[in-house]
Amino acid sequence: MPAEHAAFSVHRALPQVELLDAHYVEHAFGRHTHDTYVIAAITEGVEEFQYGGGTERAGAGTVALVNPEIVVTGHAGVPEGWGYRVLYAPVDSVLDAAADLRPAGAGTPAFTTAVTDDRELARLVHAVHGAAGRDDPLAASTAFRLLVARLLRTHAAPRRAARVAPAGALAVARARELLHARLVDPPSLDELAAAVGARPFPLLRAFRDTHGLPPHAWLNQQRVTAARSLLRRDVPPAEVAVAVGFVDQAHLARHFRRTVGVPPGAYRRAVQERTRPPAPARATVGA
Image (cartoon, one colour):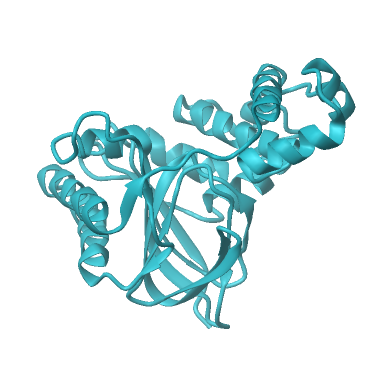
């Protein structure tokens, strides 16, 4: 059975786009969301993941597509696990690359399928990774723009807003602001509901309808997002854990790897390499 490995990198030609080249067997991603688009070309095995209310299976040669802020999981669909090359593309990066392809005011695009057998799209994912590995900025940025163009042409449509009753939407928005402000010292559900003028269970339902996660799980996602920002600024993981509200570094590492796929230290080393000219950094799980 192949050993697990995960190499994370960022290239200077695409400084906001994060790359992951991994093979997982026993590792499983818990329920989480991304604030980026996820484009994952499966190289071997099968990945199985819960997404959009159903279970998806992505086999070798296919591409898995995940929209921002949608709850997703991930685990092996066969005993030998799965390998893939992933692009985590921020919304702004996609919109910038798409600026010449879409009319003004077209709205934020959303993927219309979760798994596609699009060999050209898979080739473009590999092209971005390959160019980044060769430290070829022109090829990397060109392949990324061609990839965005193909996604918009064949696999995307304007994103639909979540349907939540106006009163519930207002309470969720206020709750979200309060949780952001109290990342380190969050209130209880009862305290949160009282602070936004709602009852606990209606707030819980509205929050899950909007974000796909209950408030405590959503809060941990925000902590991981905040941790990534601090790690990009070269803050040590132990300090990051305390700053974002995790009990200790081990607590941070557990949530971080279940969402990002690599430990915080590996992520920190990789993103610190983004401005170095020779080649993108590659940080291996367990290092």
